[in-house]
Image (cartoon, rainbow, N blue to C red):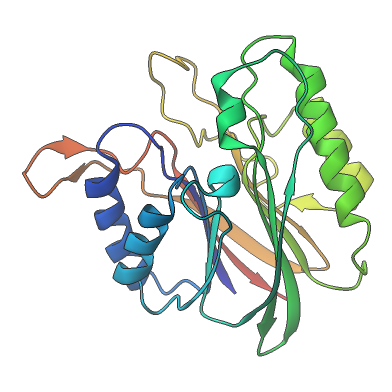
Length: 243
């Protein structure tokens, strides 16, 4: 399986960037794509129209997508479920996104695999450690229902670094491993909001013995009108997985 996870960024030139993204997804030879911050059903429909090879979609919500999450697959998606994270911590605009996890079961040629696309709350200050811990605990409890022998992939923007104690605890609780463990490269471009780049985007696996990953979509692109930009404030993580 070639899998890609990417936070698409919901601000700025969204539709022009998504048009470029859709074309890249179609050309990339991906089997499964996990996207965050797509936000609206019309945006998901735009990407689907430009990447027809990923013909099996999963997302929930009539206008505003729950969690802003989208999964696209070349293989049939036989089950899907959105599980919201508990709303804890200070009230914030992020509540409108309704953070959670989109859990899909995908029927591949080598059997069924569970793919979880998720986006956890941003750690705006030290108060949010407890918020993230609650979300990790909620997700760990949900994943405990799956057979440990079934290939399981958790991908997305976890909003914690690879060395975070929160991530380490989540891996220990679930038996997952980080495909990019030890990689110090950031997946978030430095900017006014986050001046110090770090790795926020992850691919975590269980019962997947062979896995390798790399960063994608780091380069500058040009919109249809010629203006330079990047596809997002995040980089994508591309992983080759087999079991």
